[in-house]
Length: 469
Ligand code: ARG
Image (cartoon, rainbow, N blue to C red; front, side, top):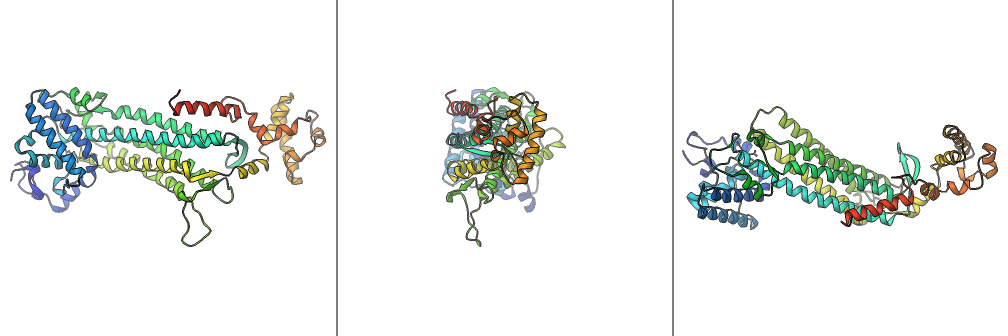
């Protein structure tokens, strides 16, 4: 039985095959259930290939025009929901070719000249990921803008700073939010770097060894906006590093989002009370009428595992494979698609959360920084400014904190004479120096939380994100 891709569910490949696939194996083998995601890119790649074949004289101009028109017809049919390939098509590449042959007859059979599904699928996947990377960069930019807006609104708000989740030193809230903007910028830079290696064209490597057909690989590559072509045909069809690289870079995005999500969850608790969630981004309990739950950041935190897992799955998929193409590669798609979908959804969810899903309770934050010992380092620094060696000052302040704890009071409750008893260097300017706002303002080292430094960074990020830098 001849017919290959045109054969229907009893399809066989070439005349080499006498029997059709076992029905379960047909299902097991097919990727059409998920790789239709690549339809637009498959059409784009085929259009570029057809044009190149004509320019190289492999087919004539009229044939190329027909192929391009046929491919565009399939695009239209898909947009109208009329392109619905079945299992017998196996994958998106066969589905398109089959439909093209149905539309054009003999001319349709010329499209696959000088290429294989192996270089074709690699091209599609890279085109697809390149688009998604550009969209993701836009999503990350939106999240940075949302964080910057909050930071600008809270340039004078204080928040307790923690190490080990124990009160450490008070911070400017804008400084805390700017830290996430920095992290996200590293993610954007990393993803841009990944994009450079995604943007390399494998088309024309054919099955694994290149082709005797006189094609021009650089023509299709530049038509499709690729920066470079693979210079080794085996590497071209065997490389899935970019899938691992994307998932790894996306894992760091997810890790950053998850840390931010965790902070929001903690901040929204009754115990902290630093933020209130708006009704638009919080959910209730089916049982406890008083509850307002932070589902959005919890889901973001929970979805990390997917993306981390895809890195592992993709690495494992690659590791034992001999050159060149192996069907194992079909497994790259669901992992990559889900990694991309999950990352983009989570970035958008966090952007919405910071745009309109929460507000900081400035009064609670103000109270929070007033009632602790997070200005203890500043007493030590005060003594240092009066010439006392730091370690000596540190010991002394530790003893003072213990005494305050025994007396159930704060450092600021000690009188100047109490302080003078402890060390003669204390003077009347001490109390002002211990106020949380003064403590924050004093941290003027570069990159510190001092208001002047925070203003510098707010201006820098505003320039960078609004393209005025
Ligand atoms: N559906 C296949 C994949 O996703 C396309 C490439 C098939 N190539 C092959 N030699 N069987 O990888």
